[in-house]
Image (tube, rainbow, N blue to C red; front, top):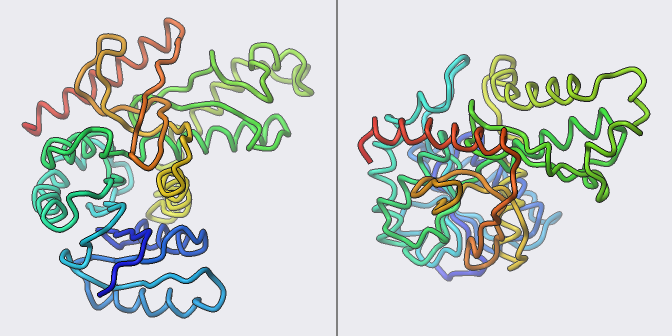
Length: 318
């Protein structure tokens, strides 16, 4: 098999992996796409179905493969993991998925040790750390999808409330991708204007309390996954698009700032944990983590996320 570049391999082709593959093909970012899953027959069907769109997208070779076929990959994306059930927290998934990673990571290192890893399986912060430890790769080359989707949800809901294009809203959810995540209101902006300055002049100012509305919006962001899972059994479209955004930053060497899960070392006294902070993402992976000046509450929230994840990592023995 001739390697075409960029070559991207997906380990785990359930709903999330296939939504990502579909969005990736439409984006035109990959020239070769390898899908690896334990259900080979179903993946072969997915490859056939995806390939039939060839006349309408940029040229891309799509392959139903196994680990040897990922050789030469520029990026390996891991979505493999047990499905999150209704009412189940992300950290509840940790122990089972860690055992799965003990099988997956050595196989990837055998055939594609040079690839950048993009970790998507939940709990993503824990599993990003696990992938980093098991692979012994530089932390810059192991990236978790982090709170890229959570931040997109926040921007979307703020855009609805304010009547502003979501692309002009700059606001982050940081910390854990999960129950202890938090919004960074002190740094949130619309078109360069801080929210604390924008809210009093907003068209909704006379009929809504800004603190109450922002609190409601964050609660909806935090609980979005649970609400979606309750209704349709899984979340996949949003994360698929979020993964393409991270992939784009890597493939195009963009130096894009994205709230991915990265190894935190020496920020607010936290060391050796994967958590989401704004990071510069390019072809090398993560080139730099930005150290935001958070307010006191946000600092406490970040530390709270770190403590929660440290507890899980201690329990699973990594």
